[in-house]
Image (tube, rainbow, N blue to C red; front, side, top):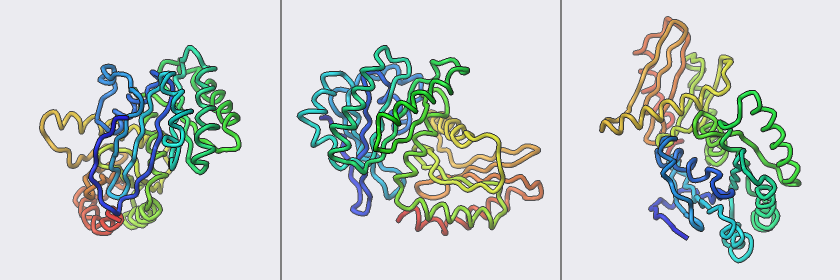
Length: 311
């Protein structure tokens, strides 16, 4: 097994995450986009994962993911369910199983998933959270995606009983990947409840339409509070995707992205580095509020959120 080192503090919560699925399902590509700043087109040069590749990834200040990217070749998966099962499946916090929506052998995909659940998770980590990602959905015509995903989700939920699972349709080419990983990560953050409560108080205090917190490195959504309804349920993940690409462009120019303001006749949105580990986004629709006032409120709130960020 390959392992990458990490030096963390004793206070950090370490969570073991298994990333599994058959070969060429897209596991390493999505991991590289979320955690290693790859863009989608660059993942084509990634090679297949051999055996298990471990990496420790810090998320915010108080969470370290012990991420096990497991090779999907049949020979490797066979050893995972036999000689390595006690090591691989013990103390798992999260299992993420990735399915290629256009797999040439769906039955074999199902068999490997069942082995993972029955031989590994149910025996060694029955309390683990399980996420199934039906991946590469961009290859399916838009008119067919919802029906196909609903069918796969129903099948997987039935196969997983009595365990509960969450399913997401994903693609590296749009915001769906950020949607799935944001939801997964938010469930792992130890103090997410405190963050949400503080966001609500802050949004109410400044009369904002909504306020969001993004993790600094990945730009995944950490928490949000909405005071005004919006008809685009995927807007957060779209913003994550856009700003992440913008940050990468800044890095190529050896520049550091600190803040941005977007304004039109309907609203103003402010995105700014907020704490050592988070960016904040504030959306206002009140035309009477000037940029300086919003900036002042954001600066004053930094002290309020600092302790939560470091706890």
